[in-house]
Image 1 (spheres, rainbow, N blue to C red):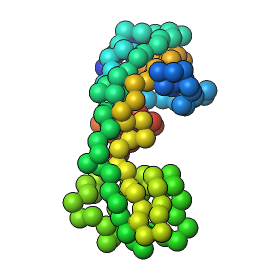
Image 2 (cartoon, helix red, strand yellow):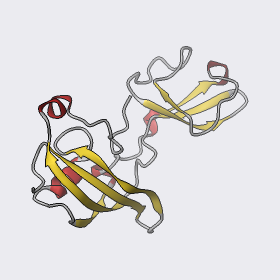
Image 3 (cartoon, helix red, strand yellow):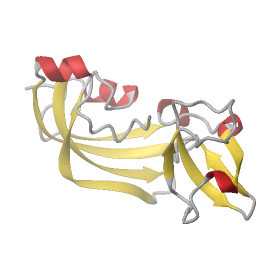
Length: 163
């Protein structure tokens, strides 16, 4: 079966920055809904017409990957609004009570730095602003079920980071 809109593909990949440093590697195939919310649009587009066993290398500029880095999505928040055992890299769905009311509530926030009085919270994707190289392999292709199409995702949305 060829990849068509709203089918399911099982993929493995190696994700690298433009210098060739490996950022992520998926060795065991994971299923994604093509034409849903699981994959970036450029990946969906590149998969069209391919079959199981095909491999491809994609170059994704930031605007086709995780977007440009937006300084407006970085917030300095009071340290007391967070747990005592807070560590850099921890992810929050939205900001805790007592934080910036203008911060979008529907974003994932990463703790990027911790100071005695403040915490730097970043709602940019960790790969925002980066051009990426993605080596993909298609392991199998199948028709999506009506339920899968209705949900718009198989729940394995590595390429989508949303609350």
